[in-house]
Length: 70
Image (cartoon, rainbow, N blue to C red; front, side, top):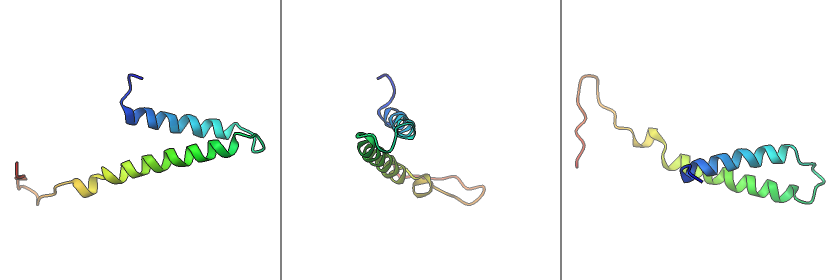
């Protein structure tokens, strides 16, 4: 619980992935694990899209200093 919230989601996604890998496909919880993993992965993907460094990076020609408006 001391991890940042996004770290918890990332770790939970990894746990769900491993749990699904070791759960038999005929187990009653298998579809629920698939749904939980899909939701978690979609959430992480949406976060990655929101913080894509290519969209937020400020590029300047070599030798120039970036001047951002404050």
